[in-house]
Length: 373
Image (cartoon, rainbow, N blue to C red; front, side, top):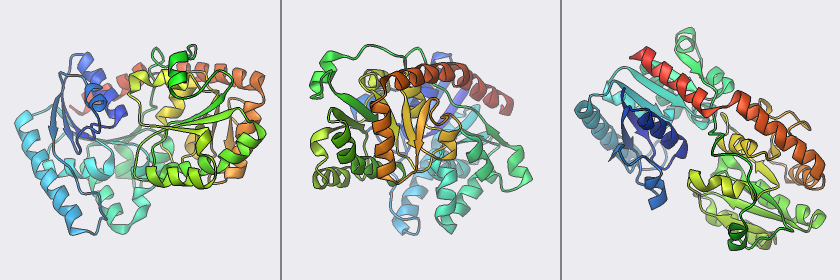
């Protein structure tokens, strides 16, 4: 297949999809809405993949003239590159931006991958944003979704329902597996073997609610003095979150770290005792599944996406989203019970192997593409 993708080069999950197709012998081009945030981001994508930058797209309000001028410019570039490349299929990753640009190209077959916030938050955020999402969905030949909740949110009528498909996402369990903690890495992060590490891998955006985790730190450390927090991410709230950590006295117990290339991420996860996800909305979290594949017990918000993979007190703990006291209590409970979290970790690995295998996920995606072609 000859596949043209529209998305963000900094999205590791899109990179994984493209890399897999490239490794399988397919020809891929990425039309990226932004430039790589680091050399690691570019090098994580297969060097044989052709990349064209159609952004940057202005990130201001939907009502801003600058916003729509930047989208119009990007859309013209998308149409030009798609026409020149003549793919077998056009794939937009994330409805709100990529999907809208894909509709302008007029190319078919056209498939959109709905990720989470695009259908669960953006669809309800404003009337204009909702209209653009609905237009993209109507234009697409198929809409793929990571979760049933996301699919249900998008299916406003029978016509849309007929072309919307749920595909269970997956993790490379050969890469993400339990290994011994890397002592040199631990030293570089100012951590040692006596510490009990809580790791977060969500970015610094409002939907991920990292401030709730930071607010829980003093109570957790008071109950478990050896607790330390490794918060890995990037985003618009980074400075605000660091200032919150200073104000609450949590900073000395936190290690903030930039986003890690996916290939190196298992080493960081394997330093942890517990993985935590504070997101208030999710389609299906990749980082949650990656931590589970590494045999980590998890504490996560009680939202539908998490409740589908976490059975409370069986393979993890669910807490009331936005409640740092409840989050702190759940973290302390796991940190104090080594026997329980070891058992939970083993169950998580088994569950991911059986239900969320990356090769199965990609075969389903490829089959969907082949059917459309």
